Image 1: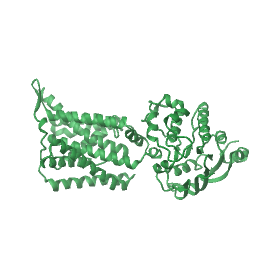
Image 2 (image 1 turned 45 degrees about the vertical axis):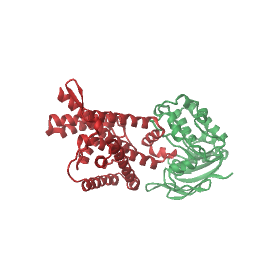
Image 3 (image 1 turned 30 degrees about the vertical axis):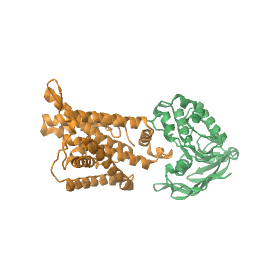
Image 4 (image 1 turned 180 degrees about the horizontal axis):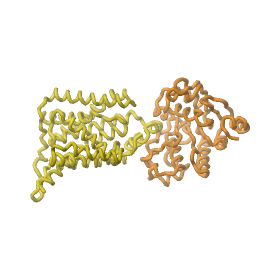
Length: 286
Length: 238
């Protein structure tokens, strides 16, 4: 019982982190048709910037905010000065983001070294909540709640605001959106910044759970890709449900049959792709 | 009256294929100009080039004297060219109200009439009833009204209308035609592409006939209506 309960909570916490990573990836892909392979590296960069800020004496929350902003700015620079030059050319764009992923990962290795480091959770979230004989780590409960709050915030932004309507219009028909005066260039920058900032925030919030180490990027990116393929690119709901599904499959796979964790992870995806090539909640993107 | 729109020596390609060859065209402010021709004559290509959706290979497009052939579609829209595209191209995941909200733009010139949500809902009362509905669930006629309304709230100085009657029931066609007449009465300049020749002739002041990407006839609408040979040869009607 305790095993199932605590692994379930671990699954939910991992699902929450994956959502923060995959939501931005999915938004960027839906709008710009760019598979941003640097997304895992941005997640790791966020974790390192957060860690460095905490080590420099900042409190956890300020460090998280700073990391999200810093990674958002990096994302904005990537979009404005690099991706923009390759607009409409899918293969060069993917190669560019892959190259950036290597560069960011190497830069992190150079600055912060190769030893895994643990980002301590904020003091008010240490310890566990006891329910009968079960103990739930406070921090993991918080991560789950934070990801739900971010999910609701994003949903309100996309579904209930004027800028969200512009984003949906551009996802539906980019050319037509431009023909009614919507600036594609401003939307691309805004969405790329937002997606990068979310990845950076996910990295900081993931630090106390996953710890911070070289290779964190390469561990997270395939999971994010799985989430997006499973949920459907461009769909926020798909990213949310996909993230929690992958969180459960991966956590329980590792706990029960560690040798087959990746097989268990990828098999359902093959099935989904065979039955619903656009993902569970995706629609065909032109 | 100044030229609202002036095209000269326009060449537009689809890949290697020349779709529009050496087209000259001008629309006077406050008039309706009809661009006619068979399928594949280059009508939609011409409108797409004006709206900035296709880059012309050669030639000039001037809008009230200002060259616009190198501008992107958002800049062209902001200058005052409203596009109602072929196939309507409404955004299926947006509500009717959201369409008008994201397209709305204050007029940047002395307008005879300011188009805001209330004004377009007056012309198309059905849109008011459907305000909260997703545009993907509207009927074809309602989608066409929405596409026109979406272009109007950008407060254009000229409206590019690409086959507004395509695929609509006769009763809806006359409803849309009445709306276009009302816009014309309001003094809006219109460049109209339409396959329904009687409808086009009833709305237009000037006509330009395209064939295989080239202008083969131009003149006023009554003259074209009185030339059965011309209609038969280039438009396939009597």
